[in-house]
Length: 396
Image (cartoon, rainbow, N blue to C red):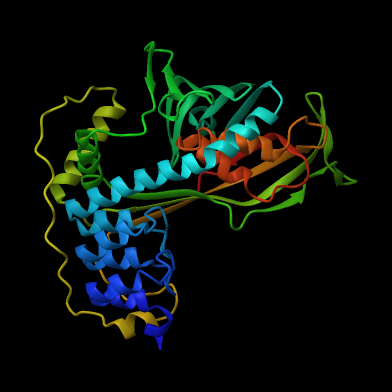
């Protein structure tokens, strides 16, 4: 019965390449089973390489997560087959370029229709823990927009898992230029610039694979599924909804509940030697020491995981949704959850809509810090435009 519901998944699970080839003519390659796995997830986890390459050739999505929150690429790194990791990485980059090109005309049109402006975005993290606020990140991000061109200046280069990287960076997007020349990054300290290329060289791909195979598998996200808003109150004896001026804009204040930064790491693919090297590398970087770029051999594929007993298809698909029997290498996993307390001020007077700001952020969404901001902005916000967000980290 389960095979009738997920025939492509079943054929991939069994490694029946002939049947997989037949079903790809009629079945949806993006469909998820009861555990959130696509056929590509299963092919990667089980090490069915022929199925992997066939699914990729038919457009199986690489940037998709299962119920556990892992993508096919993450599972490929865990399995440790270099050829599979390389194939998935190439396909991921190709699919990302295709998606960007599909959305590019609408994005350029939206930018052209939006009036020219200059604005500043300031985010400032605080903590109830004494002295911690001094080391939490803050940034004043300046955005200038004219026609289909955008310039964004920022000093917060990256922020992830309560770790951040400082700099003095400018992103310049020219909507009228060719795609391969449309985005330029300036490092104002080093006085250098780089055009963001759409195609990597073979050596760059192989370098990236080496890094993936020797690093933790990380999934970090600002969870928005449990976020709720309630009107913030003011006054000591007689409470009332808080409303005051923020700059030139009358604003209503809301308390944000359920704002959590979730981070998960896996390292079952790493040897003890890898862990020691990574620890030494991080210590050197933390102390500001430069690490010598030594010529190293390419990482070799790991031996396939050894399973005590093989889980049959019926046992897998009939198990409780989201709690599938273990199929691949035994996970070595660490999770952390950091909760933030926040308030947000929303103004109906601000001369821009949230959708218009999202169109601007879309241009630089590939960069982590703006991607997280964009994810938050897509939450169902209260009415108006967010003119002020105050975020407090409670140290937990």
